[in-house]
Length: 235
Ligand code: UDP
Image (cartoon, rainbow, N blue to C red; front, side, top):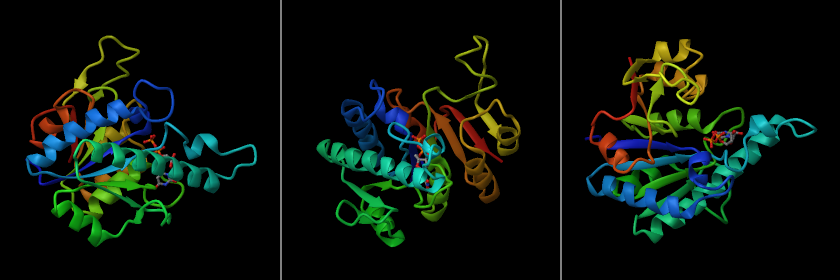
């Protein structure tokens, strides 16, 4: 069983059955899944994406500067983090939202010691604003935060159940790869589970990654117990 994990949830996943925005019903389901994990003694920090509202790289252009677009992207992650915090608490999961962009009226700032303290007390920490700087995604922010908080693994939730040798939506004979080295994941352009910056940082700092389907019942619990779920990417 892992003692401390970082779970990366994308905005697309939080949107669930909707095109955009957040699917609160799905969020409540996730809260109950994570409650089991915390109850079992694993500390959890969540990095949320914002792609259900805005992504900097897509928004930039027609006069919107890339830096501004990324600021908007970070604000999008904040909307998800705020909503998810309330949803988690509504399911009796003790949760704190800490923000990497200054927004004192709406969330406490991210402080390393505070995040540690909350997790040691069994509270789930949801981080808003990625890492607080442009030209990054929440995947890279997730790996960076996992390193900062001594997490043992980054659990990257995806809509497929792991990494395939080719796109399973396009190729019927695509095979799930249970294990993969960082080098293979970086070198193979068909594998797009995480952006290269995130993968590069994980490789350089030896942070293991597990890519899996978090929306399959009990998968988050299984993965935190060390059961073989999805694709494990390591040395
Ligand atoms: N972002 C950023 N710095 C960070 C994290 C995120 O600038 O540290 C911006 C970036 O524009 C990104 C957007 O926030 O596209 C939303 O995050 P992301 O695209 O990773 O969301 P996801 O695809 O996981 O929903």
